[in-house]
Image: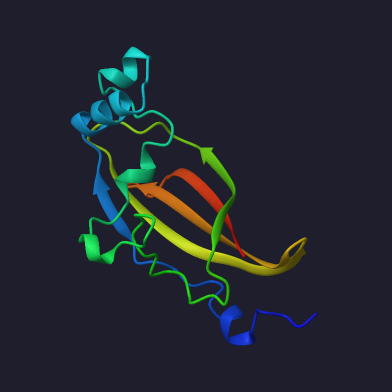
Length: 151
């Protein structure tokens, strides 16, 4: 089988996003808790952020014409892949410190792997992106590894 992954594509491994810094507000925590159906009072009061709160915190706010057909902003960290139909391949989040209102958090994303496997209906390309979120003291708050599959 001829590989779909070129040396040029592999050269993107290690590529990092620019650091993105955001402040956590009590109101944002409360809105997220309500929107996700949280029942714990500490989340509804905005005292501490619930799991997954960090995900929309670092989403880019873009115009509608900058969204893909499925409504997701185009990820400028990623190179152009020869396969384009994306599926979730896994998500691993390590929570190391709680997130509180008033915290300033900085996220950096890194493309850490690109590899290929043979699937039943043809080749599949996998890529992994790791995100580290740190507070203003430089302490690691959480680490997230996302795996996506392209077919």
